[in-house]
Structure formats: C-alpha cells, structure tokens
Image 1 (spheres, rainbow, N blue to C red):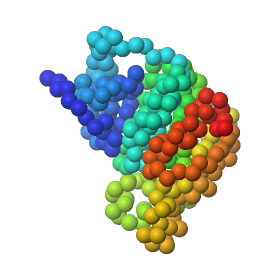
Image 2 (cartoon, one colour):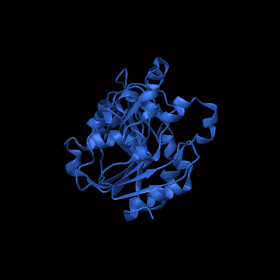
Image 3 (tube, rainbow, N blue to C red):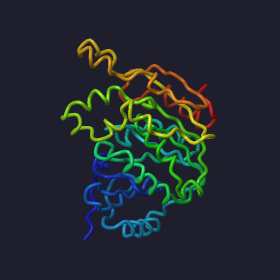
Length: 281
C-alpha cells in the first residue's frame, strides 16, 4: 500500500533524478530507494525508478498535467543549501515565459563526481525540453563545470543556452580549506570541503570553449559580524576575487547583505537579464 504524505523535499538525503512540471523523482543517496513527489512535495509513490515513472504517467491523466516544451532554466544550489533558496528567482524566470527546475542534491553527503553522475542521469531523462540554461550558486557552479566537461547523450539532444554563476568559488574557497581542518565541520559539511579548496580547484576543468556564461560576485553576507570572530577566520572568508574565471562573457559585482543571495532583488534581476539578453546591464 502506498501512503501519501508531506515531505520536506529531502535536501540532504534525497537527490533529484527526474523532473517534469514541478513533479520530481528522487533517489535516497543511502538506500537507493526512489520516490515520486508532486509539486507540493507530497510523496505519491515509492519503489524503483521505472515504477515511479509509470506512476507519474498515471498522474498525468488524473491531474491533466500540461506538456512542457521549450527552454528550461536549471538551478543548482550551493553547499548545505536546498532548492528552496531559488524561490525568488524561480518566480522571476517564470514571468519571462521560461520553465524552471530547481534541483536538490545532497551537497553535504557526497563528492563532486557523485553529484555530476546524478545530474547527468537527470539531464539524460529530461523530456520535452529543447534548450537549457543554468543558474548556479556557490559550489553548484563547480559541479556544473565538471559536468559539462564530460561527453554525455544529453548534450546532443539539448541546446545549452546560457549559464550564470552566482558567487562561485572558481579560484577555490579559502574558508572551506580552513573549516576542513576540523573534524566537526568535515562531518557537518562533507567531502566537498576539501574538494573545493584552492589547490584542488586546479584540477577542475573550465567551461568548454564557446560556452556563454556570466559571473556574479558578492560580498560575504556576514561581514558585519567580523568583529566577533578570530583574525585567522577573517582571513579565510570568501572574497569577490574567488569568483574569477577565464572566458566569462560578462561579470558583475553586486553588494549583498542577505545570507540567501536570491533574496536580493538586484541579483535576481541580473540573473534574468543575462538569461534573456546575454548581459547583466
């Protein structure tokens, strides 16, 4: 018997492997069990991937789900975040007539290569979409760089339009390297702490030549609290220079004091401008 109940979306236990009109199939990163969630994060089915997919086909008829078609903006969150950080951007993208898919992945539990395989699976199973753009926050931009360096079937069926990286640690993150020294933070934030250190970023490929991408850099949101932390911690804090990368079509610095950068209307507006016009201002 299948029980329908609300979930929290499973940001650090469940990874999205299928998306269609806000319905998603997720896989538990430990048990490898799958579940089908509706747009309100209510579980509608569980079991194997194909079983969940067949169940979704039944719900298409029950709820008369419209067919998606066209250009989809895929959003990848940062370390310790969830898809919910993108709500302001999601609404803005939909107003432009584009589709939007904010993707959950267990960022504190797995390595970059594992997240790349998850996203590759999702994109290979993306249906009724002809073009994709990406908006990434933090380490989501590093995962995307590595994903796009791998030849995969989705790249042949989908046109890649534009990419926006928001505060990406393209030069590596000194803060992550500082936190990785302590066992508590290694347990709390997982293996990507080490993988996104400045020395390890030397091995992450840049976006393929010809990729149209822009970079938004910001301040550290908690800079007003610096007087309460140690000098060594202050020296490790992120700076706009950590976002630098060769080949960007456009770059912009936007002052920010919000811990969720997408609560900043200027950042949301800049993302939408680049997605639709190919420039930030």
